Image (cartoon, rainbow, N blue to C red; front, side, top):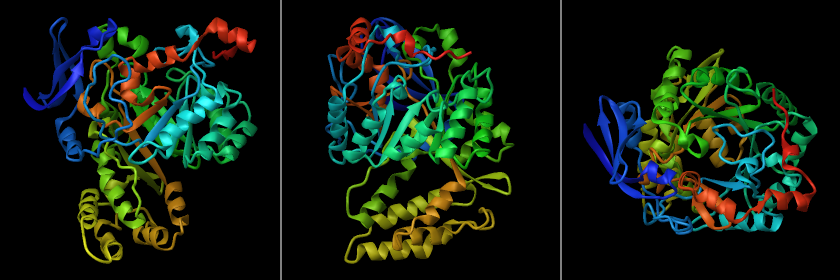
Length: 505
């Protein structure tokens, strides 16, 4: 056993008993894999997989950065202990829950459901606007990207009004996270979503067969409607080792076949919160997976055309925000997420074959170049950096391996110099983003990761990191505090919760 890093975590058994107990933890290497280990004085020791390949872990950890303090992000909300003193990452994406109602019965992986909770959380438009403004005015830089979620957000009849308010307060990018049932009903609803300002639909898509995805027929209808409405899609697949991990590569193939409307795939290794936190150790181990298990399935599906080596952590893009600061002269959102929070790659399709951008772009060389250039000081700094960047950019491209017609210098020159973004649109139309994001749970919670969380909830109690909200019980407390009983909601609205549900065979 080799100790790699000291951190803090919580005792999962104390957490199950309703107590947040902060305890010391370590990240260790053992037999080529990385684990988080910790010990509670009351409940003993715990060991959980952290990264299934130490070589890949070491590669990703090279990109660990620490951002500036973000004072408006809560390190604690109620009476739970603070896991760390200061939050160190800005809001790359803000999450807004508009309801905890849903139109399908809750499964083991759903985070919230009014029917099971016994209360309804559904803030009114004024309360929503306050939470939107809160996210937009967070220091040192307000959030620009918003994901509207639930429950099922399309169950709200005033969803269009919520979207318009998000645009009015300045969110440049708005996503809707949905199971797709409402969207599958008619194309006019999709067209209206686009008209009021939705940029992307985050579509829950857990597999390509009915065995893994009972909503597959609804998903396909939703995709057809979104294609007609010209509204782009990100597929969200929550993966478990015993259910749908084996279809990871096939989900990518499905996306490739629908690249005209599907722009990205987000694989999410299962997190054990909610009902899943009560599984036995054996049951949890049957379902638990990490990034490496996903990459192994993808490598096999594509015979190595896509591999774990093609994935880089989100924080690898940190120097780009510094370069944009120099060009634009205004503070940019910084990609300072912990490397283990997620990784991604872009693939291009050339003659029907996938080509990851890492196969023809020297990612590390280009990143080091950008980092070096962004540190230059002196007069005419912006002009000198732009000139050097355009002069040397082709050094990092192997055009013999690149997709036909790929000209990075022209793309950058058109976008940065001429403000012509048509080349970027063409580039997006020919590429697919594949990413994986692993939300933490009580068993693998790492305070060093949590401190660098870049996905934040905007709530009536302030801005809260995603993994604190979902896995320290904070979210449930907030929802309960600002909810009304089902009986009161039904009396107020004249509706019945059970009437929300759509029968899914």
